[in-house]
Amino acid sequence: MRRHYASKLFILILLMILAMHLGCVETKRLVEKPATASCVACHTDYHALQALADPDTDPPVEGCGGAAPHIAPHDRVFLGGPGYDAFLNSEHGRLACTDCHGGVDGTADKRQAHSGDFIKHPSLNAQASCGDCHDDIVRNAAGSLHEQGWGQKNAVALRMGVATFDALPQTIQAAYGQNCATCHGSCGDCHVNRPKASGGGLYKGHQFSRTPDMRDNCVACHSSRGGHAYFGLGIGAEPDVHLSQAGFTCLDCHSQQQIHGDGQIYAHRFKAALSPQCQDCHADLADSNPYHEAHVADFACHLCHSQDYNNCGSCHVGGHGARIPSHLTYKIGLNPIPDDKPYKFALLRRTLAAPDSWEKFGVARMPNFDAKTTFNYTTPHNILLWTTRTRVAAGGSCFDSCHLVGDGTETRNRELYLFATDLKESWEKSANKHIVVDGQLPDGWEKN
Image (cartoon, one colour):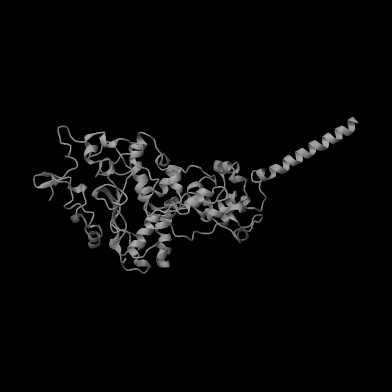
């Protein structure tokens, strides 16, 4: 009787161990040493990748931040290091490579492995690759500013005289994808890869980062107009007070929902409902000091609290190089988007557009170029409490640093404002004639 009971107990324990083993096979599949002919075996073998890598065929990415660093093809797809170990122990690491990338596993032949439904960047088909687990995010992001760049697309369409971006000639849409769109990416560009503007490829051995790194992901794309200003990299510039005193990262102001999108289509970023506002943190601004009392209704906050910031000349899409190189300056003009922002005066940034930007692609001159300004509403990320406009010398008047002040034969502070005489090209004059400050400054300010 005891022997019969012991036999049953032994069989039961054996079955439990077998069940536990089978239940763990899926979880341990990538943790155990991979088969010699498999996706993982190849992509964890640095020397094999080096031997198998094809030479780069895509042109180097060049955006507003300059040329991206070159990262060799085999380095961009190598699985290794602490990041890969973290990936193996994550939910994503429990999936088979082919679950996201398609193709064929179990082969050492590169062509066969990358055949069939293989996709190099699964998040380019995000609904199929990411939607099962992140459905709401994927649906919202598909039409978001971050992924689509609607502001740029709509500006090109407007200047071309068509109603929507999709109505543009295919040659222009393709050229836009090769040029302007290089910084507008998919899920993987923030959470798995380096952005193309930073060289591309896996960021940390395929580790999925829930929160993108401010320097390596966000600023890789938002370099010229974001990171450059925020870190105080310009000559004579200081880091933004939100960084130097509060230690804020991008996500402290720009919420996850704003970045992923809220499911609405916005013509440009200043229309987006979730964009951060100074008043979100700085309440009761209107009554906080005499300067705010006088100007808060008409002046955007950045007019007083920004430093000099990066501006561009005109577009290099045509292949000739920008006519005017990037430069630090500061210009106040009439608000070019009064339907979206309530101020009469706004800070302006000189942008890249020129009438012949798409000449290389068959459009000698954009037919409706003047429909949009080339000096656009801007909100530089270089805020300080005390700037050259908020600081007044001892004994000076409150307006010495910003109002137009007669000083002999000169007019001080005139360089802060966008006058018609500041516009050198004929097409700049016509496109921006309604935002120059000539005849529009407050009564009592001396003008010439």
